[in-house]
Amino acid sequence: MTSPGLSSASRFSEIEARLARRDLKDIYKADLPTPCMVVDQEIFEANLNKMAAHCQKTGVKLRGHVKVHKSPDIANRQIALGAIGLTCATIAECELMSNAGIGGILLTRQATSKNNIERAVALARRDSTFATVVDDPLAAEWHQEAAGAENVKLKMVVDIFAGLSRHGIEPGREALELAKQVDRAKNLELIGLMGYSGIAAHTKGWKERMKRSRDDTAGLLETVGAARGAGLPVEIITGGSTGTYNIDPELKGLTELQAGSFVFMDTIYTEIGSKNGDEFYGDFGMSLTVMTTVISRRHPHQCTIDAGNKALLRPTDQVKGRPEVKILNQGAEYGILAWKHGDRDFKLGERIEIYPSNLDMSTNVYDRYYVTRGEQVVDVWPIMGRAGAAQR
Ligand SMILES: Cc1ncc(COP(=O)(O)O)c(C=O)c1O
Figure 1 (cartoon, rainbow, N blue to C red):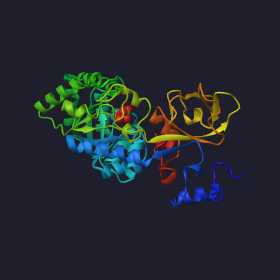
Figure 2: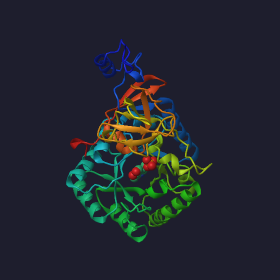
Figure 3: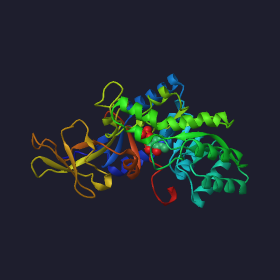
Figure 4: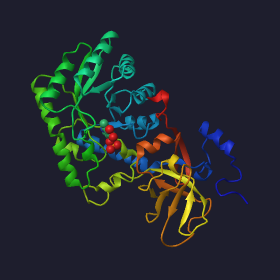
């Protein structure tokens, strides 16, 4: 009997060789090793198109965050649809995307180590469109010293606190002073201000989210007024997220959005509620799943799958098409699906798809996205920005 995961004609080594040369004719989900990441191309493209149309309609630009997907293939698709660049959390992500030929990159996490600051300056030398952020006068000094030593002009954005205490200088006088310092610095070029309202992003209920966004970005917008009043160049005001993409333009402050998760969506985001209803946030579809295989079913009301801790299985994940099934993680390479009614209804060898609840972390443990249309694999995108010594 042929095993359920492979057709008789498709030996694993042959499939691997064909994937490597992108010869994807007649390769199906059933041919793939599990656990693996699967992108539903139709939903993914609808998400990208929806955000692009939203930006075109509102005049707010997209500089989408890559920390979610870590893929130049995806970044390039966003650029082709009108995005003005990318936002990255690490200098390694910036280097990766720049090496893939993408411009307009903004590093949104302040560099403070000699290593990271020197790499930022080196990147600015290669790509004059690259910009980075500071939220501290000392870090601004360090960037000036490093850029001065290399005789490079480094574009800079002042990062202002917008409700998330992990970064951002206090809005108002302190932020204005920092913006002036950057503007005066010989090798720095002030291009704008940033305020990432990360708490607003996941605030449940559209009205509550709107209020939280308004409150958390008020200081940023006041500082924009003060900076412009002082004659400082504020070309860009950058921030925003998937949760506030349709709120930020209404607040009439941001010139660009850093939204990232909308390309795939995750289960946590679906719970924040949308403009039309507070229960479910369906503005963007869940296009990413982790596909796993049922590997044992010896006990009632549960079966075992081949995705566990290493696959970042979590109780907040969801089984595609089976919302009543609970997810329990059982070990490094084992997970358990449990249900109350109707026993033995997952078959041995059956493929199960799971929606992850944290995109950034989950995409960090896989090598590839298998892009699919129905059961067919139509593309393979390497996940190039994964963590690793060379990536930090
Ligand atoms: C600075 C910054 N901007 C934008 C985003 C993107 O937010 P989301 O993935 O919710 O769209 C993040 C996410 O953590 C972030 O840290």
